[in-house]
Every structure is written in C-alpha cells, then in structure tokens.
Image 1 (cartoon, one colour):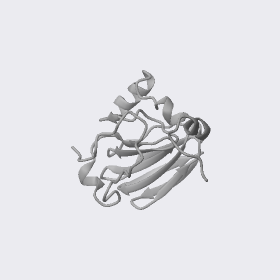
Image 2 (cartoon, one colour):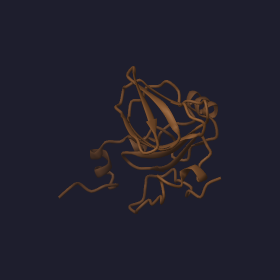
Image 3 (spheres, helix red, strand yellow):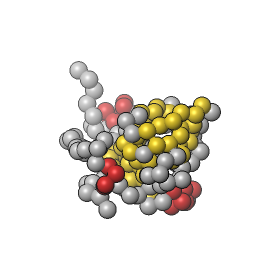
Image 4 (cartoon, one colour):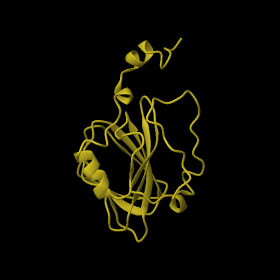
Length: 164
C-alpha cells in the first residue's frame, strides 16, 4: 500500500533515514493501523492510521512517546485530561502516563509517533488494532534488546562513539 522502505531488524547503520512529505502526503500512502518505519538505538518512528470511530487503546508505556498528527481529528486523553487534536498538533506522553487517542472525525486519524526507546519490533506492520493487540499479548511484537541498551553499553560494543 505504501512506498516506505522495508525496515531492518538489525541495529541501524550510520546513515540518514529520509521520509519525504511526512506531514503532507501520509493520507494517500498509509492504511495500516501501525507500521514501524525506523528503529534506532534510542528511538523508533511509527506511522499509525486510526480508522473512523476507532482508537489507539487506553494504555501506559515504559517509554516516552511524541505524537504528531497529520490528518483527521481526534480526542487525546492524557492522565485524565482531554484535548482535541487535529492535523499539525503534537502531543507528548511521558513514560508511565495513561493515555488514549480516539478518532472523532469523518476521516482516518493519521499520525506518526516517536517512541524513546523503541516500543515495537522493528519490522512490525499491523493491519488492524486487533492484530496489534494480539501480537503484543502473544509476545510477538517486542522491541529488540539492542534498542534497550544503555549509551555506555553501546559505546563498549562500538555501535556509537562517546562525545569528544
């Protein structure tokens, strides 16, 4: 359905990951409920499409999450506080904070989110929320160990160099 590159299950290479038109062309390119686009040592980029009348699910993560809305309208509920959201809005959900996003509009609610560190398997594509929920429950959709290591561990392994 989309022209996004196939992500790797391996730690990222030291090169640019480029995603043109992320705030303007997503509605014509997205369709899956959740698609991981890129996973780094300390963060992960995920594209989500919430269908009309759908929601992300009332949840709480052990990671920080930054969500940027590119199309549609919805309601964010963060730690019990409601906020209407629309294309162009950005919401930050700190780790350990209860949250839910509901599509309240007549078109899909499309967003991309950055988790820090990663929350999902690097090659995850969930066509529906139900598929995503099941894969998480079954332990299939799990962030790789390499995406949860400390800076010190990554430096010792030679994956990153310390600052000079």
